[in-house]
Image (cartoon, rainbow, N blue to C red):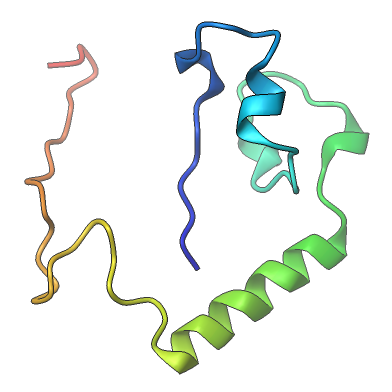
Length: 88
């Protein structure tokens, strides 16, 4: 299942950001958020089950390839670079 997280701060216009990106379908891994999050924003269990089901089906059907991040040989299209805490 293709999934790419989008950091919304890259968009200049905060007023139209939600319209441009679309509705939020769910929140995952919110327990790792840097700030406190209201309990009502956590995804319902059904969203988690739906995501797991889709990932399994896509894997079985081979829909996980091709990937935008890897070439046909499974090699990354860009060399990963690990940043130090200083951002270097």
